[in-house]
Image 1: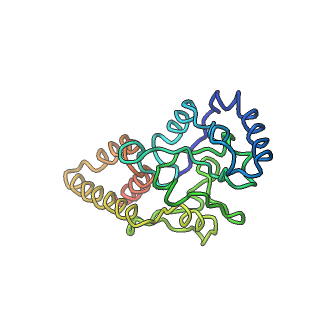
Image 2: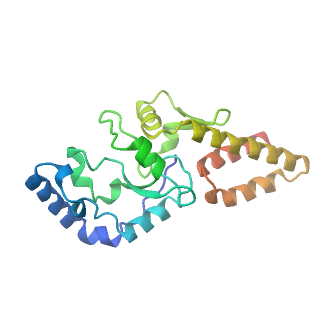
Image 3: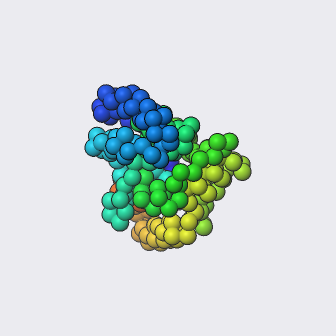
Length: 219
């Protein structure tokens, strides 16, 4: 998980978000509950320009686990503040509440979870490095200074689920092995520079960033 800079609001939201929100809230009041409202009123955020903007903002990666979306999993428009909760109906079409998420994180882990006291970290608002660090030995995320928001984020998004941890450890083992081989040939710096150039095309780019920094110190 890492910080990203939020891009400009998509045109569809700039034009219609206020109207869509008004109509959604009216429908909720008329029907008596959010669950009874027709899908057409609840999912208007599923616009092509919204999807494109979020994909670009996250460079094709999941906002939580940083896996590349589109190869083995579908992308989902994620509402950080769950739109189904009464307090957050009004944020259903709010650009600052929308993120790009893999199907696994979205439907199997984050779901509609929300901790009102210690909310999940916002990748486009919070400096993630102040809350979370990657343990390069274990492949697990760790809380910095036992921060409760970091703990919520790890637990509610499944950042340390077994398959993710194993995948991150495989990356570390492979890169360290390749680094040592290049080091013996006197090409370690070139290898790290080339690694930095391609890391945005890989799963877990922030892991690559941490690993490059660690290996630079080792070099």
